[in-house]
Image (tube, rainbow, N blue to C red; front, side, top):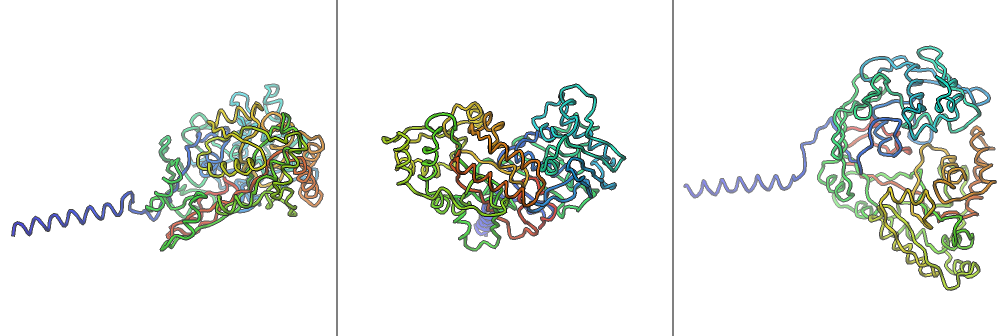
Length: 517
């Protein structure tokens, strides 16, 4: 009898352990909570210093903007329920939602909007994002300390404000939807880096550096109330760790690494879904346009023609990308242009020979944190080696990498660009206008391209602007300042119990309003 009791106890212990092991890492699921992950921690909640995607995405949860990005390329109302633009395109009048309140229950007024924008321009703050408003009348005088206010920011009444530009500037309205143009409760500006004070749909409750960020639903939100009551993000730097947590049921939604995509598409007995979304992005290899050997167009063309980019996308990225015809993603072009760089190693060799490199050449490709893409980098090396270009991979810390690129001390660098706003101009001016490229990127300079980009910035959307974008895009491709690789495609795994998920095109458009269990 005693022995039987002991055995029964042992069986109970074993069964308990087995249950615990089977559910290792799983928490009891809270039907009112969404659990997600971030690759790295954010820089804080001060919009004046929102310069990266992850920080900007967190801003959208706690703050509102005058206007917001919708699911695709459209703009939708934010705090401003409507707006008017005068015929010249220089004067914007915004009409605010009078029910909007900050998290401390005080109403949002036009004075708060103007105070937020002036803070961004303030020389005392020193925001790297002040350029968002440098087209506003009087902005430069205020920033330089030569005026007590910004003359182009006018408070008409509590629910109406006017923004006046020095000249027409088509992207400006989209600037207002960017994270740094968020509207803050100026009364709490001293603490907003750690404790955000906005009017958004979520209230930040806890932030443990490099650990997690948690939010609760703003029950008094003026707009559409989130369907979930809680939202949390764990900081998980390794992609395999994120996937493991997802498989354990501890994350509700996760981005699938390219190398895992094939496995997940074939995953047996999984009842969730994999959602694909074309990104507004470009992956590229920048070439130092003013230094040998890449100051020679023939060499730059050879670098492009030597790569079988479609094969790399298909085999090494699991199809997670679209062949780049140039810098601008196809969603932002009115017409699809032909691929100017089909795989042609024989022509690449002839071009190198005509440029004086019959015996090949040696160079270095700089990358930042490229370990997860090393198989792709090795493919680049192999293709270039086949035409006589020997490329050494230099894997560098991000800050060292960024400094070297900006100083122009590198010959080749592997990088990406994600849209700040859904306009082709965002893939032209920051990347190819000489004012930017000569100081920050590949040292590309073409006076005709500069002239066209400046015209694109002034023109309102329409056929004339679209044609000019296409012409400028073609001019850049013909110069071949980059090795144009691919436009990214995100694949996301969604747990079977999650409803209402639809990926957004712009990173700060996702506010987790419709997603629920």
